Image (cartoon, rainbow, N blue to C red):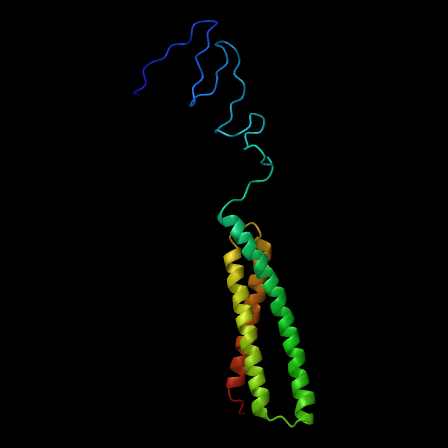
Length: 168
């Protein structure tokens, strides 16, 4: 050790406090609790203003929480778009094909465009869910991951089943 040996101060004297060392109690008295790091309060050991029961989230955790919230909103919007698409597609097939004599090409194009938009919405939901899973809102991100993944798988099977010829 490179520090020179220090002797206890003489009775009745206290060493001067410097910027690096906190003031010390007189020699022989019981020292009070000293916080583990600068800026901590003596009662809790946590920074001033922080709650002792909850850890504080800083930096990447807060942005992941925001992304998880956005992913959950996107999941809700994606499901609502899927329901709306299903209703509109049924309306287009049943009503418009009889009234305006729409051909199979127009109905197929409507189906392909709608399925592609839904696929993109579910993909964005899945990506945001994965990015948001690193924060404290893992449940919200998990819901978004589940909705996005299930939507992508469902649409992929729907598109593939339309491509595969059904000749028995």
